Length: 371
Image 1 (cartoon, rainbow, N blue to C red):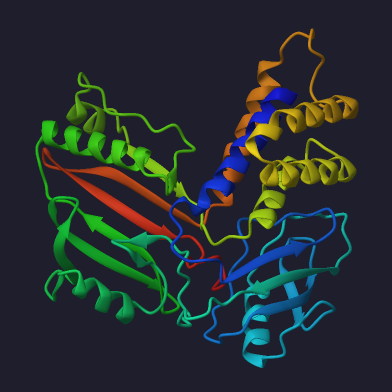
Image 2: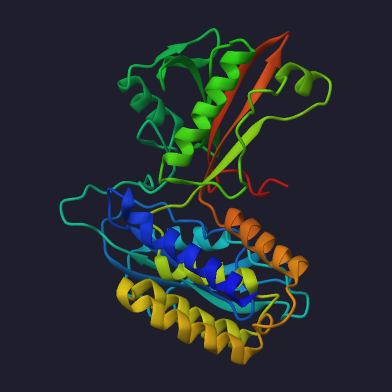
């Protein structure tokens, strides 16, 4: 059990450490929430801003038992930025943050969210998050008109009859549909051309391989290829099988330590607050330790975990059910922390097949604010 836990922590550390594999920009804003005994539901919303200033804004928050931020006030101790626009942006972002429910917590539990702004010299300021999930290199964020303008520059043309943009993607003539939420692009839908059963199998498996080989995306659901002997028509029309693959995207601009703390909070049901604090300390060290020194630190961490009574002794009988629940909690939790999702599925229409590919910026999706 403890070896499984360490493996998961190392996997999460690897995700964070490798985020800069494909980052073209340094972080512009990072966020870290502090609310005793409670982690966040999903990732922290980023403030939208167009002020070019580096520094910190600390927002005091008051959270109810259900995890909703009912009040937020910028300018707490540690704040170094005085710009009102950034204060307003951080307050709005804080109000959109959701925490885990805790019915025995104070009715108005007080905490903080720290936002750190960094500006590169010579980098133009923008309200669009450059770390957002991208389609054809265009961040899926900001006003739809701005996204459409960039899409046209890629050679796409608007079709007013179908209300979509037509152009080339991944070697195909495709239709691209844009969706916005509160004037922010939150989804790009790519409609591939129809083909026959053999053609759809080939294209589906090709897309699966391409996303698996791309370091920007992570498979947390163990997507499977379509076997050669699968009768796709029978599976879909008779057995109602859904052919679908999902990949998670994690923002490379995300604050590494804050992200690892969110990952560690996934295990709050397994450890005490004191144990979690100790394990967070070790996970932070692992991220900053050179490769040739990691093994010694891992051994130290495992020894400390055994002192905590984590898992079972070396000679104890394995507990597959406990290990499975532990792994499931990690995978589900990691998906909840993702910044974006790319997923595709097969649509059937009278014996013809089509792939629909979705790029979702999860930060801009509706979160019940209109309920």
